[in-house]
Length: 310
Ligand SMILES: [Zn+2]
Image 1 (cartoon, rainbow, N blue to C red):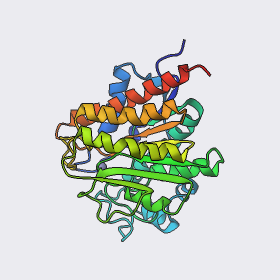
Image 2: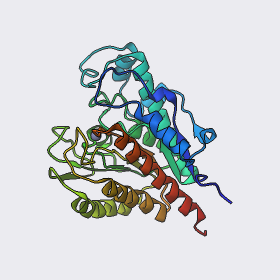
Image 3: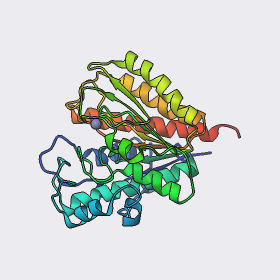
Image 4: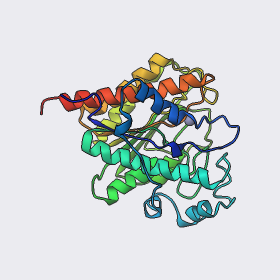
């Protein structure tokens, strides 16, 4: 008999935490989500995979050498100054770990049906620029590494963070092998919004029912693209209690959102990769429980998929 999570690879390292000073971004959430899943016995501590920092040659598949040089030298330039974060070695290292983490989760998803990075989703970083708490775009690095390894050709990034996935959109602009979907609050950062393959900009205060009504046809477009892997940026910030978001999803609405994506992948036998993305709820515990529930849904969907008769 299979254990609960045998169909998934779960990636995390304590190095995802870095000291960014007093900040709205709760970097302690990564370890708290891990603890939540281990304490709830959804995953075993021994099952967790720890990434090393991503190699420069992998980062170069999504980022320019000039920008990576700035990060290595901790240089404050026009390429790094929009991060809204300090620029310190420990912080850059955390983003390199996250980039490798999503890559490992993606390799694991191809082998086991599901991969979860308890971090990542840094969708505002573009090829040559940091932005919006994001130094390195782990989603883009992972897709490009798998393509270079010849493991996949077509990939989709399903970005349901409340903020548009501008960095991912820019990196994959004009690339016919990658479908980028972003469903976000239209009147929110970033401005302007470079085009994804499909953008769905929602009105302020959009609630569960309307959100899910817009999600379904957008996901149909993803399925029609026939991706060989889906990378899910499962931002927790469409939540009604988020400090940086202006949508109005409830916890039940977010659960329904996650099910549409993750059960949709499992039903179609498309490997799914979860990354956490944003989450700035007034109560920190809400952000942790939203992310942990996304992971639970991914684990259950993968397990159900693995039990399906061949
Ligand atoms: Zn966000």
